[in-house]
Amino acid sequence: MKAIDTHCHLSHTLKKGLKLNTILQHAQKNNVIAMIDSPVYVSDYLQSIRFHKRYSDKIFVTLGAPPANYHEINIDEVIANIRKHAENGEIVGVGEVGLDYYWVKKQTIRANQHEIFKRFIHLANELNLPLTIHSRDAEEDSVDILVFAETPVIMHSFSGNVETALECVDRGYYISIPTAVTSRKKLQRLVEVVPVENIITETDSPYLSPFPDRKRNEPANVIYAVKEIARIKELPENDVAEVTTTNAIRIFNLKI
Image (cartoon, helix red, strand yellow):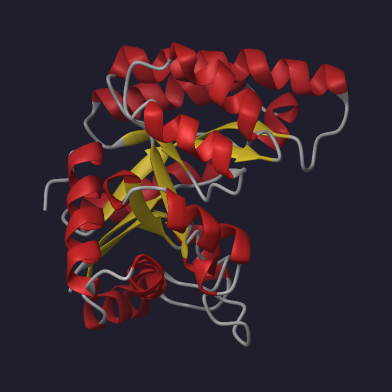
């Protein structure tokens, strides 16, 4: 049984005490054949690109910016960096980008998020790269704005309601199920209703651990999301692994 972690934060995971070689060794032991690193800030971009160049068939990169901090970031610089790395063939997607109402309550800042989000969507269209979407407490508005998207859409660590999830499915989007599905009822409910053909898996490491007694997460643990999806859907684990892995490879055009 193989799996792919479609969304992790390696720089944050390293800061939690794991070394890169250890992360890769643990992943190999659990048959996690690839991971997609999503650095949070421009200052982290080059480290992620170096990791990809060093392990080009195991570590891949998407580049974006945290929506809750759009108003504090030079978005022109972010977009220029993403375009440069995309033109160099160094990234497989744009993201995470989107909206965040959990941390941002002020309406004027939320409105600004909308406009910046549209810029990232148009950038992904221009670069012909998939979009990884952050939509915390803003799922419905995110989906409304995604009408402009022309490339594959991944709803990262999606925690919206069933109706919004099914609208995403109707549009052909993918719901990324994190390892926290082992304990979160809302995520389990989403797995029940979303077809496995529209599911991929992630850890969001070092966050969203599948183990209540262990806070630090890592890419090797993505296998527990696969197992939980299989349990909920009453499907063989190998079948779920095959579909979700194939989805990830196709969506991000992974060279593995």
